[in-house]
Image 1 (tube, rainbow, N blue to C red):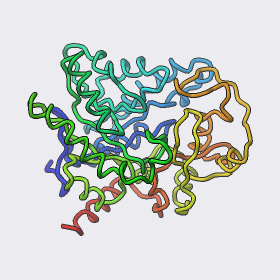
Image 2 (cartoon, one colour; image 1 turned 90 degrees about the vertical axis):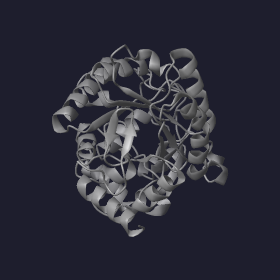
Image 3 (cartoon, helix red, strand yellow; image 1 turned 180 degrees about the vertical axis):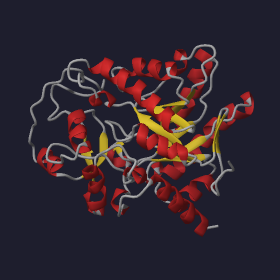
Image 4 (tube, rainbow, N blue to C red; image 1 turned 90 degrees about the horizontal axis):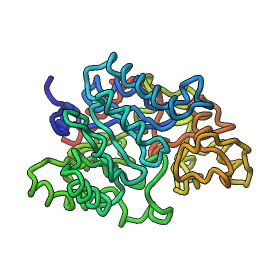
Length: 360
């Protein structure tokens, strides 16, 4: 098939005919259903590994094995649904990060996207003959440069691409709260800085390192802007939530549609980072000082203060994914309030192409 009006995205020997990566959304929001639908439209579909084990009946007693089992199953389900490019998002902060990376590679996943920490040892898990591409997610040019240097020195390997996630993204943010609206940390500046940082490696080692812009990208106009800045593609998550194929509940999707602009708030997460979410009765309760008793059996996130935290973020997100906003909340990007209806992934992609074409 030919590429779209937006052009192609090449990552190693993989070519997506649409330069869009569907962002990974954890706790079961982006699984095989959404990932396969995006891949079928020519983009790169992503299964998120974080909390994927909550799909299993033994998740509360066998957390880590449940995660690996569920990840394997979702990769295989996606393969049954598409011949397109499928990746997984595995956060460095996950306590079972190593097991999930090994599982994904063993299942011959096309691409591993890895952020929420520095994936400095990620290439060590590849063996001769493995074709899985490795793509770190960074929030600064400094991090991109450090990863390139460390991977090259230790493993003679350069990233197959780099995702640059800015402060307008949903979920946990790799910035301090006072940086979120600071022009010095705008995605436009970050993308330009990362492109300039990786260029010497590209020139010296003759290996393409596509830079992917992420965080707050919602329209075809947004995509055009970042492609013109020199990005090779974009990562989008929020816009794909309100699709029929998204793996979350209808009530979860409706929360996006019902949200007003001032409902998109910054919360203080138990993992020690700011996060962008949709306001809910649960966030109101926690912000007023309510502590929600819980028992942590897995310590699933390395950075979570599971002793002093006022609530368990995993179960808050699971509750929301199931549509219970009295006991949870939905992470969302800055533009979540712009959603107006639930449509198909194909319709989203067609709309994005139309928006892009309007500026041609």
